[in-house]
Length: 161
Image 1 (cartoon, one colour):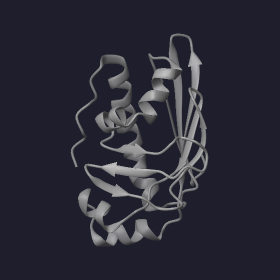
Image 2 (image 1 turned 90 degrees about the horizontal axis):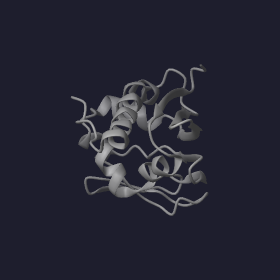
Image 3 (image 1 turned 180 degrees about the vertical axis):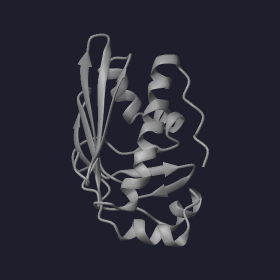
Image 4 (image 1 turned 90 degrees about the vertical axis):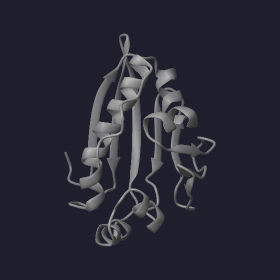
Protein backbone atom coordinates (compact mmCIF):
# COMPACT_ATOMS: atom_id res chain seq x y z
CA UNK A 1 0.00 0.00 0.00
CA UNK A 2 1.28 3.48 -0.84
CA UNK A 3 2.04 5.72 2.10
CA UNK A 4 -0.42 8.30 0.76
CA UNK A 5 -3.42 5.93 0.70
CA UNK A 6 -5.47 3.98 3.20
CA UNK A 7 -7.48 1.01 1.91
CA UNK A 8 -9.99 -1.00 3.92
CA UNK A 9 -12.16 -3.85 2.59
CA UNK A 10 -15.00 -5.71 4.25
CA UNK A 11 -17.95 -7.85 3.22
CA UNK A 12 -21.45 -6.86 4.31
CA UNK A 13 -24.54 -9.07 4.11
CA UNK A 14 -26.70 -6.58 2.21
CA UNK A 15 -27.50 -5.46 -1.32
CA UNK A 16 -25.61 -2.82 -3.31
CA UNK A 17 -28.73 -0.62 -3.25
CA UNK A 18 -29.10 -0.84 0.53
CA UNK A 19 -25.40 -0.15 1.04
CA UNK A 20 -25.61 2.85 -1.31
CA UNK A 21 -28.57 4.15 0.69
CA UNK A 22 -26.61 3.72 3.94
CA UNK A 23 -23.72 5.73 2.47
CA UNK A 24 -25.90 8.56 1.18
CA UNK A 25 -29.12 8.83 3.24
CA UNK A 26 -28.70 11.48 5.97
CA UNK A 27 -30.85 9.60 8.48
CA UNK A 28 -28.69 6.49 8.14
CA UNK A 29 -25.28 8.22 8.04
CA UNK A 30 -26.22 10.14 11.18
CA UNK A 31 -26.87 6.81 12.97
CA UNK A 32 -23.52 5.10 12.38
CA UNK A 33 -21.31 8.13 11.64
CA UNK A 34 -22.87 11.09 13.44
CA UNK A 35 -22.78 13.05 10.18
CA UNK A 36 -25.56 13.95 7.77
CA UNK A 37 -24.49 14.95 4.28
CA UNK A 38 -26.40 17.64 2.42
CA UNK A 39 -25.74 17.15 -1.28
CA UNK A 40 -27.38 16.01 -4.49
CA UNK A 41 -24.89 13.12 -4.94
CA UNK A 42 -23.94 14.12 -8.47
CA UNK A 43 -20.37 14.84 -9.65
CA UNK A 44 -19.44 18.43 -8.83
CA UNK A 45 -22.21 18.87 -6.26
CA UNK A 46 -21.20 20.69 -3.10
CA UNK A 47 -21.31 18.75 0.16
CA UNK A 48 -22.23 20.19 3.53
CA UNK A 49 -21.29 18.09 6.54
CA UNK A 50 -23.73 18.42 9.42
CA UNK A 51 -22.34 16.98 12.64
CA UNK A 52 -24.69 17.56 15.52
CA UNK A 53 -25.84 20.90 14.13
CA UNK A 54 -22.31 22.07 13.30
CA UNK A 55 -22.32 22.63 9.55
CA UNK A 56 -19.12 22.61 7.53
CA UNK A 57 -19.13 23.72 3.91
CA UNK A 58 -16.38 24.70 1.52
CA UNK A 59 -16.33 25.11 -2.28
CA UNK A 60 -13.69 22.34 -2.55
CA UNK A 61 -15.79 19.91 -0.47
CA UNK A 62 -17.65 18.10 -3.25
CA UNK A 63 -18.84 14.88 -4.84
CA UNK A 64 -16.31 13.55 -7.37
CA UNK A 65 -18.10 10.44 -8.64
CA UNK A 66 -21.49 8.90 -7.92
CA UNK A 67 -22.74 5.71 -9.55
CA UNK A 68 -25.61 4.40 -7.40
CA UNK A 69 -24.96 0.92 -6.06
CA UNK A 70 -21.40 0.87 -7.44
CA UNK A 71 -19.11 3.81 -6.67
CA UNK A 72 -19.08 6.95 -4.54
CA UNK A 73 -16.18 9.37 -4.21
CA UNK A 74 -15.85 12.79 -2.61
CA UNK A 75 -13.25 15.16 -1.27
CA UNK A 76 -12.55 14.82 2.41
CA UNK A 77 -14.02 17.40 4.71
CA UNK A 78 -12.67 20.81 5.55
CA UNK A 79 -10.75 20.97 8.82
CA UNK A 80 -12.07 23.90 10.85
CA UNK A 81 -11.37 25.16 14.38
CA UNK A 82 -15.00 24.40 15.34
CA UNK A 83 -14.66 20.80 14.13
CA UNK A 84 -11.35 20.36 15.97
CA UNK A 85 -12.82 21.69 19.20
CA UNK A 86 -15.94 19.52 18.90
CA UNK A 87 -13.94 16.32 18.46
CA UNK A 88 -11.38 17.22 21.11
CA UNK A 89 -8.39 17.97 18.89
CA UNK A 90 -5.89 20.37 20.41
CA UNK A 91 -4.38 23.42 18.73
CA UNK A 92 -1.13 21.71 17.73
CA UNK A 93 -2.84 18.76 16.05
CA UNK A 94 -5.41 21.08 14.44
CA UNK A 95 -2.61 23.16 12.91
CA UNK A 96 -1.01 20.04 11.41
CA UNK A 97 -4.34 18.81 10.04
CA UNK A 98 -5.26 22.18 8.55
CA UNK A 99 -1.88 22.40 6.79
CA UNK A 100 -2.34 19.08 4.96
CA UNK A 101 -3.66 18.93 1.40
CA UNK A 102 -7.27 17.97 0.77
CA UNK A 103 -7.71 14.23 0.37
CA UNK A 104 -10.51 12.13 -1.05
CA UNK A 105 -12.43 9.01 -0.12
CA UNK A 106 -13.87 6.43 -2.52
CA UNK A 107 -16.35 3.67 -1.74
CA UNK A 108 -16.38 0.80 -4.26
CA UNK A 109 -19.35 -1.57 -3.97
CA UNK A 110 -19.12 -5.00 -5.65
CA UNK A 111 -21.74 -7.74 -5.39
CA UNK A 112 -20.25 -10.92 -3.91
CA UNK A 113 -22.88 -13.64 -3.61
CA UNK A 114 -25.29 -12.66 -0.84
CA UNK A 115 -22.88 -9.97 0.36
CA UNK A 116 -21.38 -6.77 -0.98
CA UNK A 117 -17.64 -6.24 -1.00
CA UNK A 118 -17.05 -2.69 0.21
CA UNK A 119 -13.62 -1.20 -0.38
CA UNK A 120 -12.92 2.20 1.14
CA UNK A 121 -9.92 3.99 -0.33
CA UNK A 122 -8.86 7.23 1.30
CA UNK A 123 -6.06 8.72 -0.78
CA UNK A 124 -4.26 11.88 -1.82
CA UNK A 125 -3.08 11.96 1.79
CA UNK A 126 0.13 13.58 2.96
CA UNK A 127 2.65 10.74 3.36
CA UNK A 128 3.12 10.26 7.09
CA UNK A 129 0.49 12.94 7.75
CA UNK A 130 -1.78 13.37 10.72
CA UNK A 131 -4.99 12.74 8.77
CA UNK A 132 -3.64 9.38 7.64
CA UNK A 133 -2.85 8.50 11.24
CA UNK A 134 -6.36 9.41 12.42
CA UNK A 135 -8.26 7.64 9.63
CA UNK A 136 -6.25 4.47 10.22
CA UNK A 137 -8.29 4.02 13.37
CA UNK A 138 -11.40 5.91 12.29
CA UNK A 139 -12.37 4.07 9.11
CA UNK A 140 -12.33 0.53 10.59
CA UNK A 141 -14.54 1.66 13.50
CA UNK A 142 -16.91 3.55 11.22
CA UNK A 143 -17.24 0.75 8.66
CA UNK A 144 -17.78 -1.79 11.46
CA UNK A 145 -20.69 0.31 12.72
CA UNK A 146 -22.10 0.59 9.17
CA UNK A 147 -21.82 -3.19 8.75
CA UNK A 148 -23.55 -3.79 12.08
CA UNK A 149 -26.37 -1.39 11.18
CA UNK A 150 -27.02 -3.10 7.85
CA UNK A 151 -26.77 -6.66 9.19
CA UNK A 152 -28.52 -6.27 12.56
CA UNK A 153 -30.43 -2.99 12.41
CA UNK A 154 -28.28 -1.51 15.19
CA UNK A 155 -25.15 0.58 14.83
CA UNK A 156 -22.24 0.11 17.24
CA UNK A 157 -21.73 2.55 20.11
CA UNK A 158 -19.17 5.26 19.33
CA UNK A 159 -15.60 4.22 20.18
CA UNK A 160 -14.14 5.78 23.33
CA UNK A 161 -12.04 8.88 22.78
